[in-house]
Image (cartoon, rainbow, N blue to C red):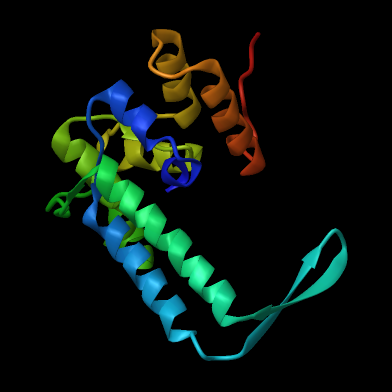
Length: 181
C-alpha cells in the first residue's frame, strides 16, 4: 500500500509496464472501510502518546468520513493502476511457509505467490518481506526506492517527484535511503 499512499502507482506502472496486486489487498481495504462505517454515529475516544505527552483523540463522524474517503481513494488508485488478481496457494510449500500460513493466514503471502505465478519481481519497501519471499518460493524482490531511481534515470519521472517520494519514504521511517546529487 505504500506506493499507493505515496501516489506513485502511475510512475511505477509507466516504468514496469503493468502492476498487479492480489485481490486480498482490495478485500482488506473493503474491510477497513466497513469497520469505519460501523463507527459512524458511535462515540469513541483513544489515548496515545506524542512527544512524551499523552493525547486524547475523540472520533467524530467527520473524522470517520474523512478516514473512509482516504481509504476509498486508496482503493480507487490501486484499482486504476493495478490488475487485481485472485491468488492460489501452491500445493507445495516449504515448512517455513506452512508455518507462516498457519500462524498468520495465507493472505500474508498472496503478493509472494502472485509474483511467482506471474514470473515477475515482487516490489516491496519491506526488506524482511522480500527476504521471506525468497525463502518461501525463490521470488526476487525489489526495493521501492530502487525502482524509483531507475524510473528517474530513464526519464520516466522527474527529479522533483522522485525527491518527494524519497521524503515520503523517510517520513515512513525507512531506515535506509540512498541520496545523491
